Structures are given as C-alpha cells and as structure tokens.
Length: 67
Image: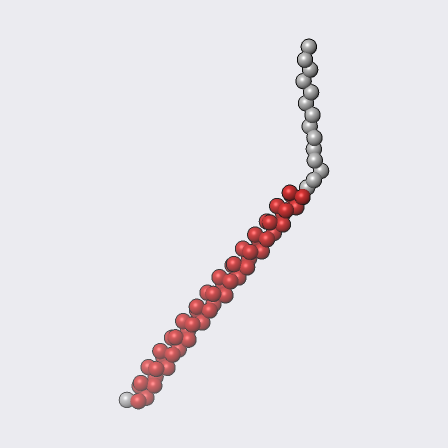
C-alpha cells in the first residue's frame, strides 16, 4: 500500500514584501515629483505668456506716443 505525504513549508523571509513596499513608496514619490514639476511648468508658461502680453501692450503704447 502506498502512502502520500504532503508537507507545507512557510518561509518567514518577508524581504520580498519589504522590497515591494519600498518600490511603491518610490513610485508615489516620483508621481508627486512629476505632478509638482508639471505645476511649475504650467506657472512658467503662464508667466511667459503674461510677459509677452505686457511687451505687446508696451509696444502698442509707445507707438501711440510716437504718432
């Protein structure tokens, strides 16, 4: 007669979970950094647009003075 033996071994090594947690933290930090960079870029573009509008208004004003 044959006998089947099943054995379950649970490893207490949790380094994989720790690496996963660190990777998720880094991904969250990268996403926050990218969002902050996008906001800064938007503000920079808006600032350039305002400067261009101011320059155009200044040129128009000087043209009227020179007439």
